[in-house]
Amino acid sequence: MSSSDSEDISSELESVVEEDFDSDWEDITDDSAEYDSDCSTDASEEQPYCGLCAAQRDSTGYDGRLYLPPQDSYLCCHCGLKKAEVATRKLKICCYCREAYYCSKTCQKEHWPQHKLVCGKTTRIDIALFYPFLACLVEISHYHPDTPLHPAHLHTIINLPIPVISDVTSLPSGRKAIVVKLGESIPFEEAMPHNPAWWRTSPCDDVRVHLHRRIGREGHVLPIVTAICLSLLAELYTTTSRLGRDQPPRVRLKYRSHSIVDFGVCKGEAHVSESAMLAYMDSPENIWMGQDPKDHYWIYFKTVLGANLYLDCGLFAFNAMAGVHSVPYSPWKVSELVPAIFVEPTSATARHTTEAHRASVLRSPLLADAVARWRDADITGSLREFMSSLAGKDVGPEESKLAMETVTWQRGRLHQVIGKETWRTWPQEVEQIWWTSDYVHEGEDVFLQRQRDANHQLMLRRVQKRWERRSRRKSERIRKTE
Image 1 (spheres, rainbow, N blue to C red):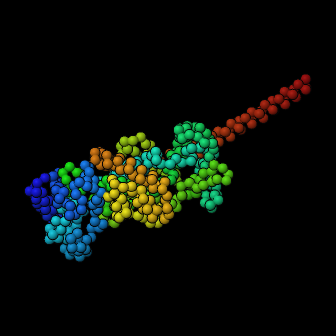
Image 2 (tube, helix red, strand yellow; image 1 turned 60 degrees about the vertical axis):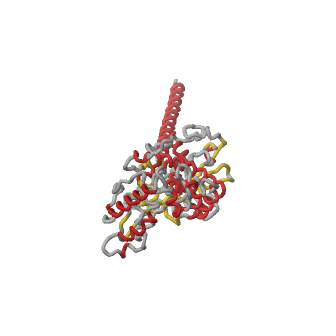
Image 3 (spheres, one colour; image 1 turned 90 degrees about the horizontal axis):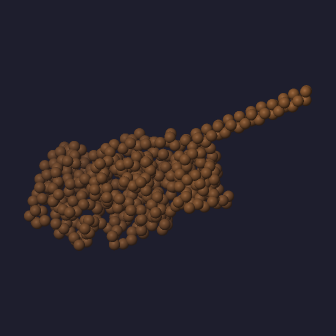
């Protein structure tokens, strides 16, 4: 692109942004201006801002630099004037990137030399329509080849760990849960949910499938949700339309009409009953707690107006069966329904968790440095440090390695969806499914019905034996009288 072309494009952008300044930012839509695909400056023009030369970027335009949105809409990007100090009008937003706010045309024009280096037509994805895809990534990550297998998936089950049927047991640690008794070892290929050999005492196939899935969701929640957030950071917030005409599009997250300005991982406690927790025992001396509800993790998103949204895909381990359909979000073979609870600011969905603290992924300097070094260095140490800080303990090398392997896999899938714009074909409304009434009590109902049938058959056998005894006695009396 010649310097004259760049000057013409810059002039065009200036005119568009200047014309847009007279509109309130709440009323501006994504289609408020058409963006020319050639609206990009030369690499030399961008160097003073990003500090990277063209040779430091690969063919995909990835240079590891993050382009973060402002954290609020209450400050002018140039003079820092607060929204409350603007007497006659609200702060206005740039109609191209929708990430720069100004209090006047003067500030907008004076800030343009810096802002034009990162400004560009932005594709914004609504997280309220995109989260089912993230839930599918979480679902598949639990069965990723690098995810360690659960001990219950390598042993047979010899009891009935079903609520109501099984009593809650007090553990040596003082906690209470339903105990899953493990039997002999079995190859993972044979410990499939549809194989009766894995759990011969199961009331029915549906209950066996449900318990198999539930056990498979235990553990490794922190590395998986951290990998989800880091994948979003690396794939979406390293893109900017000013890198060059052949570079990937500028993509950001939003909620409704408001930008997402922060996201990360929350730590807290899940509110579940004792009968919803599982413990495991392979011998009378060896019993351990399963998923700990006091060490629970989920994803948060924060809008520019300060509203919080939450995506929790880990409550299925506690029998909280809420989710979304996997079709058409997942091109891979997964369950028809994937666990996910998405809580919006105006949602009637009750919170099942209490937040203790959170750690931002979008604003983390540690992870920003990790993204910058992604292609040249091992970032497992950075992931371990981030997760350990959030967990309040050392997560260990196994969880760190799992997070690294998972984020690499997740990022590739996310890159395909963003690059091919598959998300544009997804439904414009997501239906959250609660299938508790269909499955949670099904095993109990089947078991109780079998008990009633067995009792009925026992009663019939007793009546029949009593009748047979009476018949024999009567026959004996008749013979005696003759």
